[in-house]
Length: 468
Image (cartoon, rainbow, N blue to C red):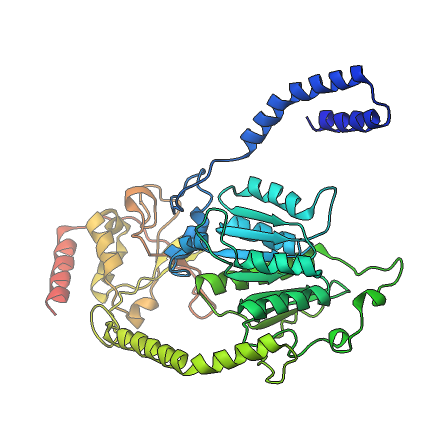
């Protein structure tokens, strides 16, 4: 199919150079013959939309592992992710990977911005790829340059506009994945004007380090509060470029930065974990610096200064609400019992320890009352005796020095660790001995008969333990 399409494109190019009515008719027939195969191939690749997220573990459910985060207590309600809209500016090495991650996570709506082309516009190519990965995500393509006046107005309007289905208004988060400071300053200006929270990301020119940063207008420093040198000096970035020289690019670094960015975005949207205000990444030294930057009261961006004033006016009410929430959580924790049995978190545990040495199963923790009966290997054949051995957990130094060996060659004597009906109770495990507890195995004892007196003695000991 792919080769046929490529051949068709070549013939179309040739037809443009030398128009021929007969060739045009043949071309129409070829195109008509390919419509059905292309439609079948597209239908087979795409799955149908899923109305509700489910934790059901089946092959047809792409969200089962994501919903497991809710079952494990990481996220309160993962399905809320469908209610959020995220805008990604720059669909390059970081932005394209971030877009795919959010698509696989099941984000509700994704707005993509880029003016570059790769045979077709980057945004259209991304929509085509991402819709095949997850058709549940609403994708919007904006092929424009946000640094132009017209592009900025369109960008600003799209961030405020209602989604195509009419359910969402505006966006919940903007992710900046651009590769120049001019575009970053434009995103900064738009988000300051709208009071829109956004996250910025970047990769160094040597492609071995990067960073992500959370920017909340009025609460954290904006990009103009502490601008990079190239911005503060007023130098045009385009004059810094040299002919034939480009920045390095390493897919692994791009992937790491995109992963950190989307992870931070998910924590912010779904309200779990701690959202990083700034997180750096240096792959050469495995260094992850973090910091938090406060806004500059003398910021050169008027919109930023206005947002700072609004933030300070609402700060007392916000602090009071946070304090009340903290006190409510502390009160709820105090009312919850520390332990189901008592308030001191004390519980009785019956110890069981089994050692495996040289292939022989050795029973270590036993009751003194059962010691005389351990001379008979046939004692272990009785199910009640085996259960008693497992549930009697009195520690005794005398019996820690005595190891009872079950001869591996004695096939007539079933091991207490055998499978089937004689398997260990759930939770009981075997441990290998350490240097302090290891002792040389004693010689195997011969099989002998167990008499009724031994069983009666066992019963008396059990009754005495139960009554004490």
